[in-house]
Length: 81
Image (cartoon, rainbow, N blue to C red; front, side, top):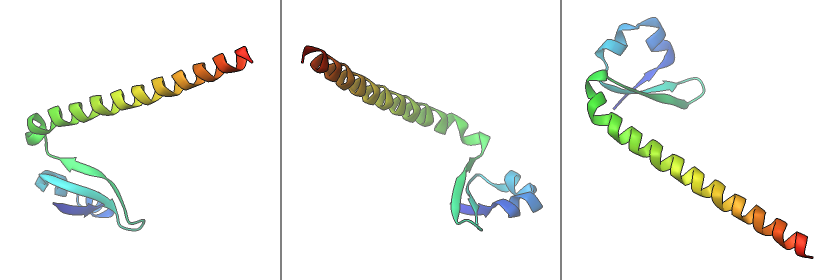
């Protein structure tokens, strides 16, 4: 996978048309801003992204439920004392 700098893309926007898959980086801060994936690969990648989103949401909901269960348990113990 090729890496493309933000300033490179700003100075030469035609790079996006030439890219299939690429990493967008900010070379000054040395961080990855994201990834560019051409629309022709959308049908392959979209189901994977949706699956990851569902799994992340379920994990967040489970953590929230566990946290709320602990809060309710603590309130119940405090009320009984």
